[in-house]
Length: 92
Image 1 (cartoon, rainbow, N blue to C red):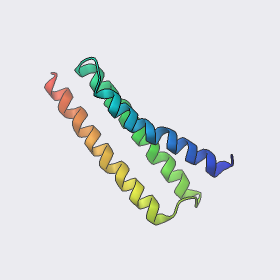
Image 2 (cartoon, helix red, strand yellow):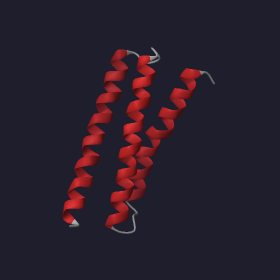
Image 3 (cartoon, rainbow, N blue to C red):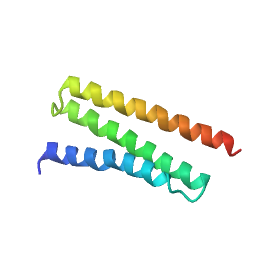
């Protein structure tokens, strides 16, 4: 697997991890565990954004696709941050 393939592989790994952690959060063992799973999903979302940037900077991803995927990352990150913040405020 070449450089581009490695980047795509990393993006696929962390990108699918976002959804997996959100799904796992539904079965959390309490609020603290739920928040923890969402925070992991947030970290994976941030990592996905990083790999998208590298793919774009190495001309492996067209501008239109990069903009679309990055916008989705930003929207997802906002939802996760909002959910985490709300949950933390409620548990204080």
